[in-house]
Image 1 (tube, one colour):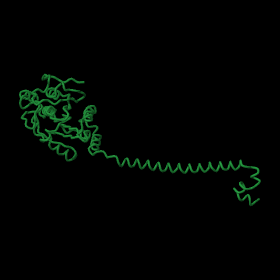
Image 2 (image 1 turned 180 degrees about the horizontal axis):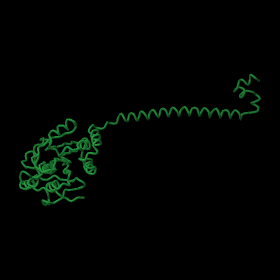
Image 3 (image 1 turned 30 degrees about the vertical axis):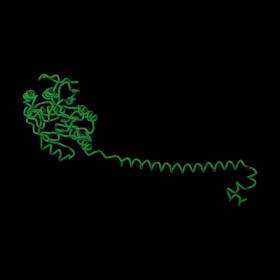
Image 4 (image 1 turned 135 degrees about the horizontal axis):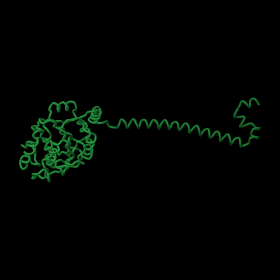
Length: 311
């Protein structure tokens, strides 16, 4: 009996007394328990392997996706860093005005040609928002333009010499009216123009570009001897109307549109009928390409004291 007890499982399976008393029911119960235990162990092992394997695949997939994602362009990174660090700059454009320009750039046919008069706190932002397009900046300060290009090689900037003065705005507008059939036509190649308000000393290739968006945010115009923006607004209006191909429409934005002199100049050359929206300090015009024989900037000529309506 002692030997039988020490055999454990043998006693249960082979002893004649147990077989008689337990019969087939004990065998079935043991088989069921053994089978259940085996299934449980196999399931546990399989589940652990699956979890480990799945986790490994997930981590690998995520890591691979990070590795395959292209990094942000340098222009975007610099713009974000610069604009965030200068968020308290009082000279910067309002968020409302920036959004108006940004929305147009998003809808612009690609690649988008964007001309900006003035190097401002938003310079890097404009370059970044027009990613994959061409953004050109025009400024009256040759030293600052050179500095910006050296510090930010991705910026394309040129300097231009303005011969105008803010105090002469009325006389300059009058001179255009006198020569609107000749040197100051609304459709012409400004490179060969003798119009006082036409900028003809830009790089030659810029006169051949079909500009989709033009922003006038310079030059300075806050005191009588400052250049003012009359020449920039006139030049923008001629470039927009003289397009030979591409999109026949050009969006022209004038910042500081709340200033009377800029509003009057815009009324003369960009025209009230082309004003899409005026909000905060930004005027938004949409100009269409004109025939080469055109000799009138506006269909309904504004009065000298007229001011564009706001919305």
